[in-house]
Image 1: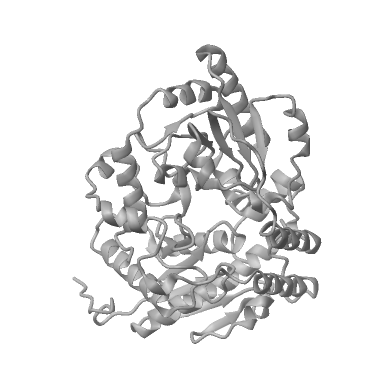
Image 2 (image 1 turned 90 degrees about the vertical axis):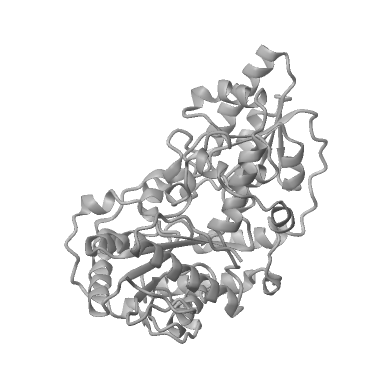
Length: 468
């Protein structure tokens, strides 16, 4: 049996970690790695973009593009095409173009280097952010073939003060239990839930948001790096001009005045999701875009109004991240004479949730926000919160009218929902901020990773229990 000391360090044994491609805060993985090294473990960081070189770190790091040669990892084009690689999916589904053979060759060359690096440094645990970038996907293939552990990180569910850290994946792929009875057995701390659901328990987390200018500058350097052929173009979904448009929209949106509209007396809230997000591309088997979502929801509401003699409306809120990229003027034109449909761009989302009869979503985190207020939620996609007594799930769009109507006539299971939300916030999520430069966030995550590893080694099922 392995024993851990007070710092989570295994007696007589250390673990070799490899961190690849962190999130927009390029110091996030660096800080976690430094904390793990303080506990006696070994960490390596692989950098891929020119912008990453701006950030100094205290752990060994390698700028991969300077080491990749023409040698290729033994994997077929067909095997690569079957992976959930965002660049490939985006080319096929959004751009409607084929993936160049040259790009697949590049994947294989990077795989060759990463595989040799893992072997040379005896890596045992691979750490990825999100997991759908091609670097993540090809590294995951290598890790699985070598029998290595993989840990996935992502923005938290209760933003901006929580972080996701999961050994199975994010969103639908996560280790979150799906059994209703599991949550019924949870002990609820009402005072803690009420006080800290969306506010941190730790004082150090009261920090400012990330600097949009810094994020934009780092992204610009990476674009320059790809244009100068220092490294590949890692992101096919955004060009320089699209990035510039997005940056200015983001800057002006914060100053934009809220829409002056009167909310209907009874309505279904329909929050649009980012149309090209991995949640839509990989976890929405039937609804392919937001136009589809509105069409099916409109048909369902129409059917309910006719059958029940109701005057139910739909309030549609566009996603801020999509406003510079997707133009819904055609959709608004199509529905301009339908009095049941109201579009808003900027409106307090808490008010929209509070006053709605139900939230209809594919699998958005807005669903979690609605559940946190014990509101009815109807889902149309694969979601980790598709749990009996927590949400009503329509397995196909054809089931939506019946499922939505049933939800409106079913008493909300407040007890189960509150226990589910309590588990997510105080057991599954790590309290911390992706933007935090405070050492305590990195220390919490490092301790969580080691505790998670300990439970795996002793054969315990992974149900995280680390928050504050």
